[in-house]
Length: 132
Image 1 (spheres, one colour):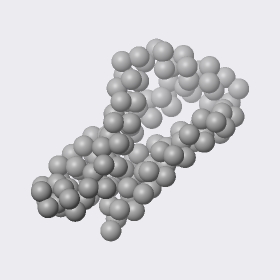
Image 2 (cartoon, one colour; image 1 turned 120 degrees about the horizontal axis):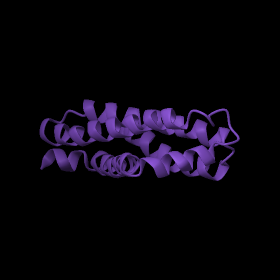
Image 3 (cartoon, rainbow, N blue to C red; image 1 turned 180 degrees about the vertical axis):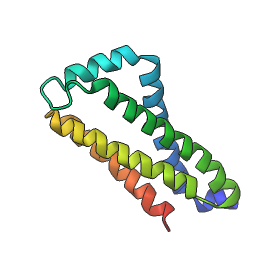
């Protein structure tokens, strides 16, 4: 119980990001065709227009990996006080957000890029806390 109280902020950030990234990854798996269609349309005027399925796979793998590492990392943090796996997961999440930001900017979806900033700030704050 002491470790939960000691790491309450980190745990809440991890839970937030787990929900965000695992839900996004699961959505991509369960509605692959819909996501590919959306991405192709979204990037029709960008250099990525012919790479939509490949880029979607890259983001999908990163989202699922980050969610899995953060999920396992929560248990390590609570039971052992070790946040290494949670930190790895949050770092992969930050990198995937950077990839998404690049895509949004190239697609000239500036509003979409702006919404990523909120997730990125939460992620970076989580990294900061887990690096202490």
